[in-house]
Image 1 (cartoon, rainbow, N blue to C red):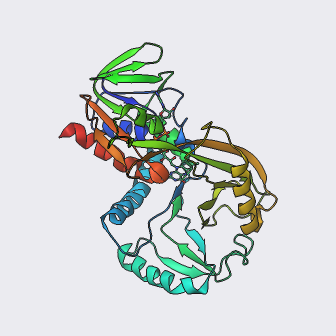
Image 2 (cartoon, helix red, strand yellow; image 1 turned 180 degrees about the vertical axis):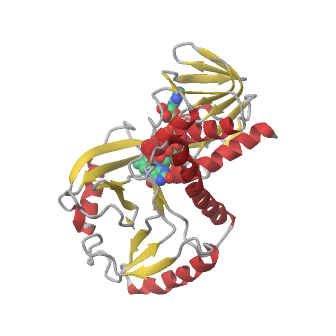
Image 3 (cartoon, rainbow, N blue to C red; image 1 turned 135 degrees about the vertical axis):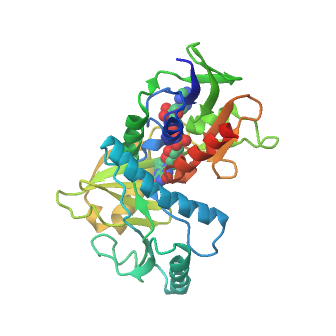
Length: 347
Ligand SMILES: Cc1cc2nc3c(=O)[nH]c(=O)nc-3n(C[C@H](O)[C@H](O)[C@H](O)COP(=O)(O)OP(=O)(O)OC[C@H]3O[C@@H](n4cnc5c(N)ncnc54)[C@H](O)[C@@H]3O)c2cc1C
């Protein structure tokens, strides 16, 4: 199966690289230990949220461009594959708990007018009390109109459908120049190898400074709840409060999450930290007070040491491009990481 380009890892990063490479006509193979979307990219949340629109800078501008270009990409992908990836610019409510916060948010709403260039706005509203409890939002809520959601699992399915077969059962052990060696001894050679194994990729990178790893996995737990039939919540905005997201997913489903854990014993099991988040969600969102929990889920987010995308030629291995570091915004940034990764082999 040796190919010109070998992608290891079929999360949203690897799949986005594969799709972008295929459009340039290159010969691409993609392999994964467990299958497409088996890692963090299957997050139930799928939040696509911008930075605050004040104190505009280069980082905020590039994230704004990523979010706006993603909506175009999604349209193309859905047209090509016929798979609905559940993209909705649904907005995001941030409850206002103190009147002293109002001037700050009014200022931000003004900044949104200029910095978001008419794509979407920010306003202060009185939310539906069955969705966001007035007790939790005594001064109303900010609605961030640029925030969107995506069904991350369907996004991966659509990307996989677009790129063709992902070969499963290839668990990478280590890399040599232009060669990948898998745990069962298989070896694959390619002119270019894209290391897109999410949090696992950091294991194959040297420290950025002495004793400072290039990055690490940070565990996150999330859940899916089912509200009653015809709940009327499917098109409501995301709620965000103190690191807690409540995200409508369609079909009366709501995702709740996520924890952020540096220390963990098992990356893929859930515990009482998730139960506490679900309880907090029920308190502020009456519509899910009695909703049934239908899935609990946990994985590792790939977090680079500087919390940014890590798309680089491997410092010591020829022909190896590393693409990871999506951390909490990987769904919005994967297509940008793909562009950056491909630029590395074109220069
Ligand atoms: C709880 C939680 C909630 C999140 N919510 C959001 C959100 O709302 N919005 C957002 O934008 N981002 C969110 N994220 C972050 C987002 O999921 C990640 O940034 C993104 O999915 C990373 O994609 P990736 O392709 O780099 O990694 P992964 O999706 O982890 O993909 C890596 C792939 O590599 C494979 N693999 C791993 N090791 C090996 C190996 N040794 N050999 C071969 N294959 C291997 C895995 O099977 C997997 O398929 C969340 C993450 C978590 C954990």
